Length: 278
Image (cartoon, rainbow, N blue to C red; front, side, top):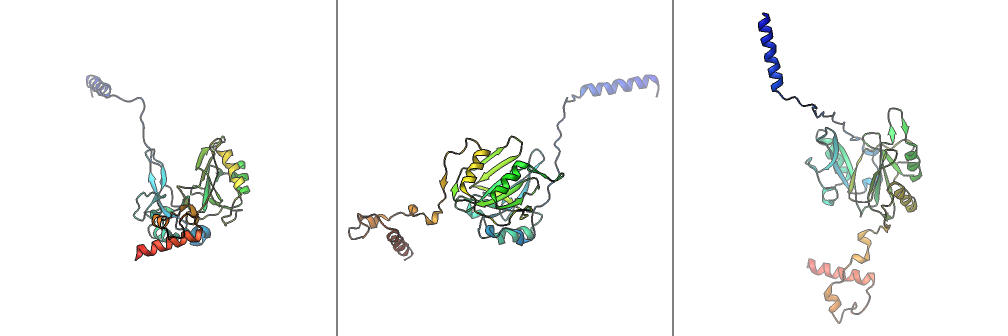
């Protein structure tokens, strides 16, 4: 190539470069590696107390815009479902069987915490370094004080703790001053379940002192608590019964002008149910 041809070629290349607008920054979305399944194939590892409740859902991994993945509750078809709707929940046996048979569709199973259920949960994030095998000291002391079942989260850098307690509080979630996370759930939330009990902790779900729960709640979520409600299962709450109007207005009815007893209310309901069936 002659000097004239080289100069001509260089001028052409410069023209092409100048004609193309090159952005100063280029954003490239890097998709992270999909996390492994956290499904535990040994049914004996799961909590006996949790198996008694039909509050189980399936869990799927869903990719987010930033390339990371999140775990969402799913129905048997693999689609997102509202875990607060009891119609979407199932028995442990059914959830386990479906997940085991469809390893490519589901990553594991989870448990739905509900206001009517007895089992509540605490989620602690970034409290364990699996490289150094060191615990966050504050989190470790808190977990030991609760004396109940503690399981590894799927990442093994956090834990899920399950307990029973005769009070109801608003769900709480907050990053702590040391950048670890604390979450406490009494209703309308699901947690993934690995069945892997952290070494040194009981595999039994125990009842925790309400005073201890409120102390930790106020410590983790300062200023959030407004009241504490005693948890009353709906099926045993006499306040949920309604006296049929026909009984109250009937002058020959024993409930006329009286404060009904529980037995009288049950009798009214029984009659009403029988008449409806008939």
